[in-house]
Amino acid sequence: MKPYGVYEQLEPPEEPPAPTPPGRFTPKPSRGALLSAVLVTLIFLFFIHFFHLCSSSALRRGGGGNGDGPCADPCRIVLVESIPEGMSYEGAGNPSTFDAWLNLVGSARRSLDVAAFYWTMTNEDTQTQEPSASQGERILEELLKLPARGVSVRVAVNSPSSKFPLSDLQALERSGAAVRTVDMPRLTRGVLHTKFWIVDGAHLYIGSANMDWRSLTQVKELGTAVYNCSCLARDLAKVFEAYWLLGLPNASIPTPWPVSFSTSFNMETPLELNLNDTPAAVYFSSAPPPLCAPGRTEDLRALLSVIDAAEEFVHVAVMSYLPTMEFSYPKRFWPAIDNRLRKAIFERRVKVRLLVGCWPHSKAEMFPFLKSLAAVGDNRTRYSVEVRLFMVPSSAAQARIPYARVNHNKYMVTEKAAYIGTSNWSGDYFVQTAGSALVVNQTQSGAGATVPGQLRAVFERDWSSPYSADIGDTGRWERLCGSR
Ligand SMILES: *[C@@H]1O[C@H](CO)[C@@H](O)[C@H](O)[C@H]1NC(C)=O
Ligand SMILES: *[C@@H]1O[C@H](CO)[C@@H](O)[C@H](O)[C@H]1NC(C)=O
Ligand SMILES: *[C@@H]1O[C@H](CO)[C@@H](O)[C@H](O)[C@H]1NC(C)=O
Ligand SMILES: *[C@@H]1O[C@H](CO)[C@@H](O)[C@H](O)[C@H]1NC(C)=O
Ligand SMILES: *[C@@H]1O[C@H](CO)[C@@H](O)[C@H](O)[C@H]1NC(C)=O
Figure 1 (tube, rainbow, N blue to C red):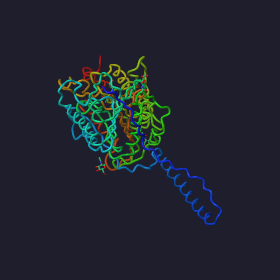
Figure 2: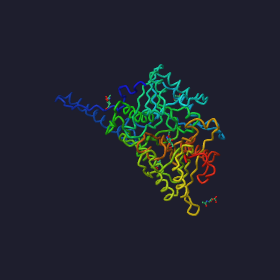
Figure 3: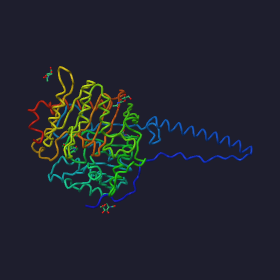
Figure 4: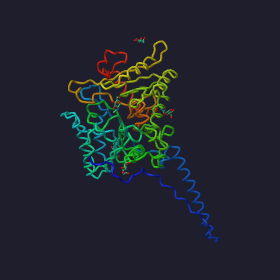
């Protein structure tokens, strides 16, 4: 293995042009000079006033960090999904993750940045001849062509462990891509679990799909692609630059983060823009807290605030849900999210639905906690909460593909907002692991469906599909999931 992380010049996101401080004006005591002095003073005062207006309106619109006012980009947002082979749904679905990635690679002219947990885009890892790996192999092939086309490719990846093969990363480096490994275990005792792409500072993907061939054809994934939206892409680039900095040898987490990493788009002052010609307020959250530069909303706060703002319903689709720290010892109870759901159910009578991934690797302790949450729902008090498990069906051959055939979705939708994340819902992911989410608040119904409206449709399709079973319906799921 070639050592990754050769030092390269860090390119911080664009900085606002600093207004040059005017020198002191000292007029000479002649008449002509006096006149021009008055003129220059007037012009100077005009400029001071102008700068003041600019900066205050930029701040008002949450654009203070970029100093470029409102977002006029013609942003297009598309929900993209991977539906595992062999599953069938009624009606047309969303575009595939594969198509979105192919579009993104195809549109790259200058740069492509990818943050990922690990890379297994060819099925070399399983030592099988799995035809469904061809989509992943195609994406890798296209990515490897980019440096020769003059596109600068940067890949930030969690420090590879012996569990994951290195061949994709080595191929990327040979193609001319820059690869840095982020030693999250050393930095925060977590991993880099984020999955996003940024293309030409204008387009992006964020969602549950790993850089894994299975994420295109064998694992159920949900994410979003945003095109022609430099306001959003430039903000996500600040999160990428943070990973990139931490990928330097022996890097440490800066405290505080330099100003170039800070953002003014957050929970309090989201970026206001049109998404598919419909007004929306959006921001990216990030985890864990030490990786949040000033202004960046922590992922857990973002998630809780979406739950807290709901007045009608909260629908959650997530692979694993545990009110504990999942991977740390000694074992710790971590009820931050579970408490807020119960509070919403009890205090505001919000209707909560939780759709959780079920596969042979599901942790046994997940089920009693899910049953406990479901037990709050009661016909006599009318607390409304339902929990279902989602099972991706497998043929005998499909069942032999390791770590596949699961609902890997990580999103939430309410009547007000969509939260599209990269983390499982247990403590480690918010306290130690690097992850991020896109929060879209879009209440007004304009032309076309809103992002929360489209996400709700995805949720309802899955919820009422033959692949989901109530947590009380043990006969249907106990054989299929849970390490017991
Ligand atoms: C992005 O903008 C370009 C140029 O205006 C346009 O050709 C392209 O179709 C747009 N992409 C999307 C997905 O809307
Ligand atoms: C990183 O730390 C190790 C161990 O402390 C040291 O051997 C190595 O020289 C350091 N590398 C750099 C680039 O500072
Ligand atoms: C979305 O925006 C509306 C209006 O600006 C606000 O009342 C609401 O709290 C926001 N919702 C979320 C989830 O942030
Ligand atoms: C999410 O949780 C499951 C179950 O604990 C785990 O196997 C998986 O690695 C976690 N992370 C990912 C890849 O989403
Ligand atoms: C609640 O009511 C529904 C519909 O009347 C019924 O199917 C269900 O069994 C009831 N649940 C409990 C826990 O009594």
